[in-house]
Image (cartoon, rainbow, N blue to C red):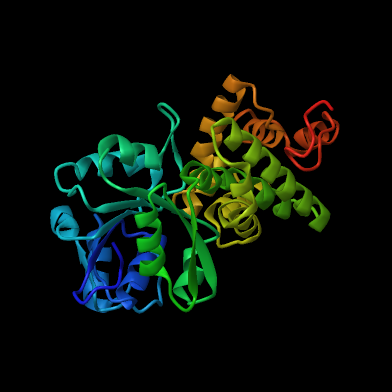
Length: 345
């Protein structure tokens, strides 16, 4: 299966958010007919009549090969690949809604960076559970949608155990400003995308509180250690976290005000409550729910994650930032680079 044929191919993007829209536009520019399904009637109308997603990507002129619809069957029918670009809290609902509409040879791709609490499922787990015979993959990386929409240079990772999926997506989405790398460690790539949202909240808080570059560098590198430690306990390859889906995504999310999770952290650092910060953002910040799930899982499994526990204490237990900062700086001394030295050696 390749993306290079003499006939026009069709792709489907389920979801009308910023990243889904950016992906849809790249696919259309690369010659696909793209069906975008969404529930918001105003966004649908704006895309079809004015060629613009005014809510999430204002200013981006969308390719005429994109057709927005609220008919999910019409969006999916005849597609070679279906991208699920849905917030994690709605992911299972939409996947199950497409039962009976997906053909067995269609490629299914998740672009969602989140975790389902019941059973600690990643989005690929949901896809594979509902569609066990379909080829499945995940996309993750330092992909701030607004920058991609502006044509700024960026790269991402397509992860799948199926080489056909990796090759197809690499060919379908590659363009002059968007480069696609491949990885077979789907679980590690997906966990990296979910976990980094937690740490973006922390670095956003640190920036608001006036901490300097040394502090930010320390937080990012210790975050990477926690991420990889947790992911390896779940069966991921630690080397995955040296790439775009690990350190790349972590850095982009932890330093950019374009990141929803960073902005939540920044607002809280400036004195807003979690509820006020979330309401002001007006978008989903996946890191809040991910924090709850990861903290519970880490504590259950006995995985050392001091930053996760510190953020949880600040957001949900009323502990002051200054108190957890002191606790972090006076805690157990650890190895600098995770896995380079046995713990306790």
